[in-house]
Amino acid sequence: MTPLATSASHTSFVLDRSFKASVARVFAAWADPAAKLRWTDCHAATSTPEYHMDFRPGGHETYRSVTADGTRLAVEKVFLDIVPAARIVFAYSMAANDRMLSASLVTVEFTDGSAGSALKLTEQLVYLDGHHDLEQRRRGTEEGLDRLLLEVDAM
Image (tube, rainbow, N blue to C red; front, side, top):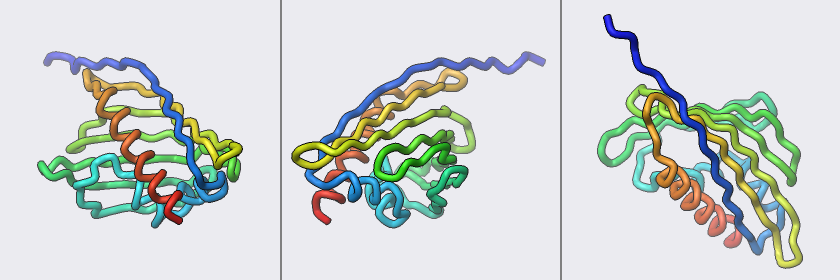
């Protein structure tokens, strides 16, 4: 029997966004499960058969969806640190059709600005067993943050 080939490759990216809305409003859109589900999905044309979130340190977020081509996506998240209106740190894993693709550590920092607020998102990724989708992951996260901007600036 041939041993299973395994690999892990590491990378990261940082995204910055400015909002007209206050830090409190932007943070609230991360903390409220209904609001988060409206803006967070990086695949806008998916069906979401399962979603729940327990937003507290040690709490979990589970997201399962099916893309238009039938791919089953699963994201399992645990919140490691939450400082209201200042910082969220979470770890998550992503799988497609029951194949583990990656694991990440994400830090989201919130700051007040003169004309609203700012957000800095840093994601550190480990891609597993040859999977690599950095540009797609970055673009999907950017699209979610763009929808967050629409969510909070419209409130």
